[in-house]
Image (cartoon, rainbow, N blue to C red; front, side, top):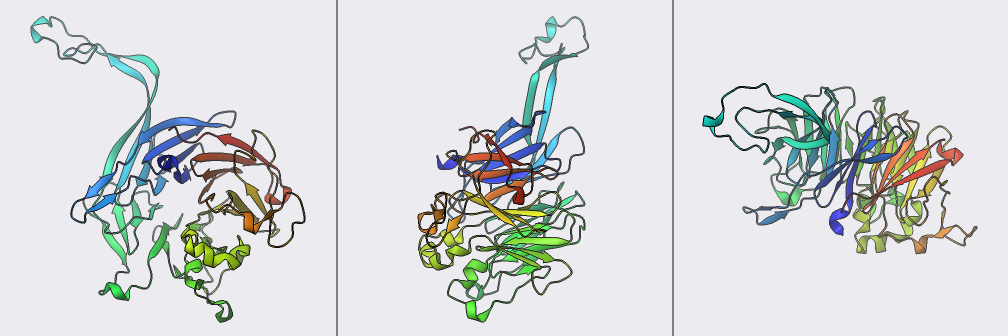
Length: 416
């Protein structure tokens, strides 16, 4: 079912929990067990389909982004958003319940006050562990266009939300107003030349944020000049930045466009310090990819915990990993057909011409319906989460990509 397709994946700050959102508006949280496996911890309906009567538009329940708030007590807090509404959720555990109320019976019904002759002190009794998810805040009516990003600030008090033309700054305790900090909307919409694609706060400096646009520009400010000899009808489309991630150190910025991932040094804005080709073999197929709308797919990217390896998705359920030190890369596949529990993933190779090996895959046989758009990397360990349609895969990579030792642990899709 289309509602089961995973639309976002996000580890919390410790990596103990992994949250996924789907097109049906549901959030599934997985918890890591002592033996290392992730099992379902909580499932709840975050958003429902709505209808904007003023604009006569349906608002999908699809979860666009999930962001965890830093933990301050045993409960967990996370922000979820669809196209228009952001919600703050509290996820907490309860293993005790109160019994012995004076005014209510055990079923919760009010007692006849005339029957109460003595007073008793309620007591807490053990009960089976119950994980509860409750909405604590609803942030709505601030975006005229579809929300594509939310990012929690390092001050732990504010966060941003971005749509196609504006970025707003919110306080986590105030739901009825926000501050507009970026506005790209021209006075005449016919003059519109770019839209915001993604925005993110710096991990350490609360006064810094980066946002990217459909023209390939990342403002903080980064823009790579296009080689005139390589300019074509598709140049602006493929240069549109679909994801931006600050490194854990805060020194670098990772951006993903349609064909490449780039690493930028915050101290050098004129060009990226590293560029990695994700699927350069698709350059000859841009026309057909345009006709099928695949050229507008938005791939995410991720850093590992030490900022030494980067990861991003591709087609045919492939995902790519690049070792920054050795400049080696590997292509791996996330699919039920190729993955068996505790098996070692074998590298894949896409060839343009004649196959060199039996396991090689021709570029003409790639399945563009199978795509890895959403990925996440454990903040401290070599554990990655890959969303492939309605399946969630969790892999443990014991070595860097140059070692090719990848032990996958396949997890089930969110409950139907």
